[in-house]
Image (cartoon, rainbow, N blue to C red):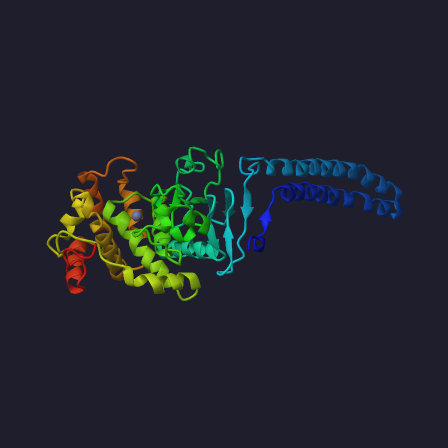
Length: 402
Ligand SMILES: [Zn+2]
């Protein structure tokens, strides 16, 4: 199956640059020679002399221009770690039923991200098509770019902890694109998906090759590890939302996890009709979506207190309340105040200068985030949210399903 995918090498790219430089040089020389015969045929001798005298100056200026043009290709080709990398660039053919299995580290570059593939990754042929659609849909719905100008970018993250201490992508620089690491975990150390403003790590059993899965009894003989026959695009959209929103602002736990969970469902629902693999994912997995445990029902009286508390003091084993509370809060904001709710809130946080960056999200910080929400949507935003929850039977079941 591997021959269905073409592998790009870097040598032709470099050659193209030089051929292009040659064309530029030849084109610039052409007009100088063709002007000579016209000068000889002209009748008035005295006037002709004047013209001839002026021409060499023009020729000189054209030669100077040619020299400037020739310098450009040298600036274009600056070898980087990526150019010199021994790892191949892969392209998928877009066909869902086709599969590419990596036998070494390799990468796939798209317009807004680069996929860094571990060994023994098994990608369906439409994976990049679906990833592109997910990024575009999140940008469209949140009305922000995944590559904002004011984000402080860094090079490709050192994720050597996943590669036995080796970093195949050392010194790579793909700014401002997102780095997406697709991992296999052949020793079953328990890798899970995660995200930051710089990168996403995707660990999905459906993307492990048959060889990896069948090489370790921790997988094939496990009762609790389930390998689905579809890629979990809900999880990917969740992590992708983290990276895109973190490139805009930091938020409280409720908002950070809530918007990621909200967008994962919104994105899958929006794309399912036109993207068969995402449609299949929705059809098979939607029934397993659930609301996590919450410690108290949400209403008009306690909604703001719960937002400020941010579930910072609940037991770790019960975590999940922030996901479901934030998801319903985002759904409420979207339905009540419009599609640009995130953009408006982000702009208010920027205007108030309350983004805490990498500092601790203390109670004082969380009060600032609550006040920013009220500044944008009105002082009654929390009481309205509480009433909306009661009316829609959202966040009203204690215990939930875990
Ligand atoms: Zn998350």
